[in-house]
Length: 243
Length: 317
Image 1 (cartoon, each protein chain N blue to C red):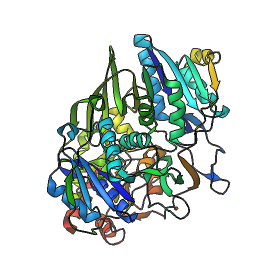
Image 2: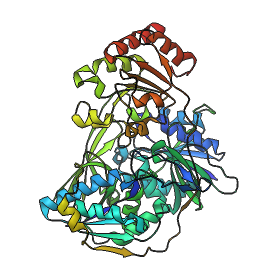
Image 3: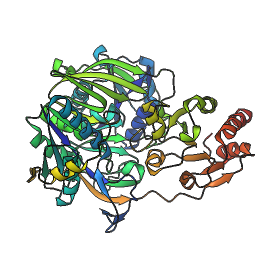
Image 4: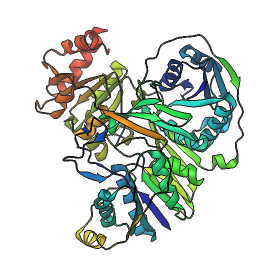
């Protein structure tokens, strides 16, 4: 079985978000980049499937050269080889087009439910639609039995059991697998694993990001004594007007 | 130009976020038709007119009582064509979001997700969307003629603008391939207030010391008509089910009021709650970082403060 895991290269979840160049660019100063946390779950499940059933795992990232340390980390975790589509990921349609271009021939195409920078949560569905394959998201459990894929999908207030056949696209989230931490042997071997750089398919983005904004700063917290809880209720009613 | 709005229902009721999608489309100023899939009560569909839909298409196909993403995308694409609608509006949800993506590819549309404001059509079609898990916004110009807009909860104020809508049956051509993904079982909390849609949320963290102490939070939630949530460590240890985990990698909530009890306020948790209108933090540690993100705070022991708060709310009614 051939598994493709698509990973995003995103700021660490604890990063302070700022913009530069008149609020048109993300400020990368002091920001550490990681494999998207949801993509990391997808990768972990792919490695489990590799260990249990001898699958091969390829990781794919759409990004410029700066994403290579992130890709190498995925190789250190256990992927066999990697593809980097050499382009700035302008929007979800552009990224989905690039993934679809390289995903043919894979049995299972996994990625996170969403990237944690733009949160659009649509790339997996777009890829499925482009390739005419079933796509399921957000998937919190995924097991393969022959060509049947049994999944659990999170829905508001519960879960749904879903079945489809390979090939298939899935957007993953916890608790599909435990994140894997690369060991020293993995890190050493990742240096020599194939990382193929390919040029993107020419396609126009469907949307254009013009500008970014930060939310207005939060006012100071109003502290209330634990002996005067009734005051909180009054404030919630009359001042915040939320009760 | 007509706008089509996909409305979702749960337990026979049209979801509030879907009504917000109708109100959003109405505020865009065009003729609004809504579409509901599966069996939904006619009175419930007619009432969608109050928020600005003149017509509601009902696709009463029993196979659509389950949210099969491809089948839904197929019906919506056909309905856009039949209605001459160039724009589809829907609420982002576990069903709405993937459906929006599939439709966008099928009809060759630009897609915006998590829109928080009405589009600015002054020299383009610019939508403000929430990004970085609520930590920032992006202004996005939707370039294509056709558009699919997913809206975030509270993107627009819900107010009544009209009377009943005219309900008409719509039939779509569906093939077996549309149902290739089979939903074999659904486990869903019934009669509960669902966390992603709740107006008030009461959440507990590790400071609650164990699942056996959740009763006081449930009492408070019941008194407020709130949903209950929890922090990531709490769902990781298994004190509470995963679908209650609020945070960066869990449920993102946007209630009027968020009450956090015994949660320190790690950035990962804050990312899931920063769209809340008002945040109350109860923690015995005065240095808990969550106080910096709160509107109101109480330093104190949860086991004494929470029951007192429940009583105070009861008394104020």
